Length: 268
Ligand SMILES: Nc1ncnc2c1ncn2[C@@H]1O[C@H](COP(=O)(O)OP(=O)(O)OP(=O)(O)O)[C@@H](O)[C@H]1O
Image 1: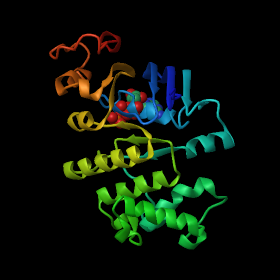
Image 2 (image 1 turned 60 degrees about the vertical axis):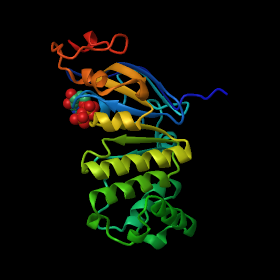
Image 3 (image 1 turned 180 degrees about the vertical axis):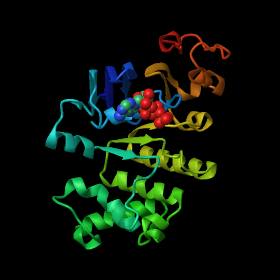
Image 4 (image 1 turned 60 degrees about the horizontal axis):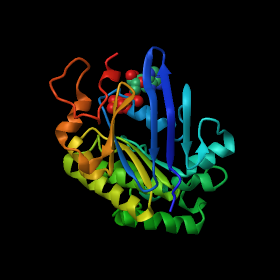
């Protein structure tokens, strides 16, 4: 059966002044695929993710998500597209003084008109859905606890439940475990994987931990100076193959595996 791509990037280029943040990036990501973005700080990972929900506009090339062009989407069309794409952040971005359950409910705001304050402002069916999601991420007992009193790992669980509240088809995660200890990081990544698999979601996730990335992703995309320098199934890679992404231009102390890397492109 033919599945249309969940995400298609075609020659995507983005500059900020003299900085080329993304340089001619072409990628097709299938539904259900777990893609990890790896690369040095500043290599373009967040910029790529932000193009996938219309937070950034390309200078050239195109971005298509779930069959719809993102760059030309405006207003209602853009809101609809965003509601199909969940986003998880490094700093969780919860509303601190509100309860875990209310934070999850805010994920449904795109289904509603106008702002909502307090639990009872939401229809019962949504409150039930939010409670079920909190249970799914293992936090049913924290439903009425203020978000800013939860641990980092717990806050990220709330943020994951909030992203799933919008019933997305794609999940984007920008360094979701960069603020967590190694054990919580493992748990959160396992949770994302399990929830995404259960729902058949495509996930695109930037990470800094190579070992974690290889154990988690189905595909690894390496960026350097905005260029894709590695794109391979995770199972085909070992840590040394991936470490070549992190080589500084001009430093060839790590031998790149043939075919998978185009290191010359990043040397400029
Ligand atoms: N809004 C902006 N204005 C100016 N420059 C920007 C902007 N956003 C990103 N950049 C630049 O674009 C490049 C890519 O940044 P990006 O945040 O995508 O990298 P990253 O790989 O996500 O890094 P990190 O791992 O540190 O989060 C960097 O050189 C960055 O300074």
